[in-house]
Length: 211
Image (cartoon, rainbow, N blue to C red; front, side):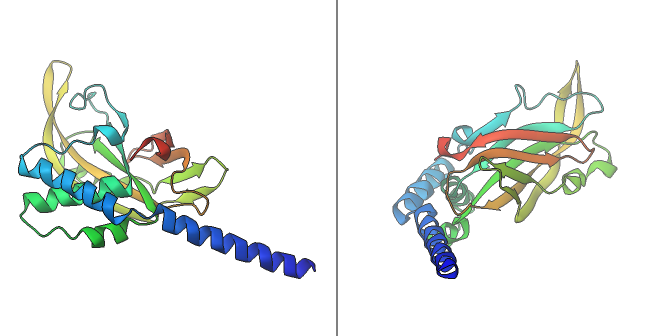
């Protein structure tokens, strides 16, 4: 009897996981809505706005401390936001909107996009984003997950205000992606990672707050 109960429990957990995967997949209607939003921003030549998905940002993202690297913002990447951004980029470049492919690629995942700047503008800082650790999340039920995808955009040189001067810094973004837990597609927990200089960051998040 005990063995049969274990088998039933395993089957139930598998069913719950399958149902969660279906429920967590962005619907075609929502994917089309997200793509229309992104394409409309591009058509109007507007800057891509991520304000509804900001987890944390600096008071002044173009102000820095002399000799110190830091974050400029942390953005939550939901399936909706991911499709919206892809549509924005493709529209700017007059490329087709492959909405269903984007929807499938985003299914079952959530992510965080870190915008950061380097310590200096010297050549040896050009790879600063590659020196960040892998990220992990500890969910509200105590489960710990490591990022399954990691991608870097940039960096490029930009000017930051440092006291009364302007200094060049490398700036770019680093995206971490995680699998949705079996129990929910809107988890909450704590994101943790370490930057190129060993500084540890921790951010509490609740994906139920983001579209």
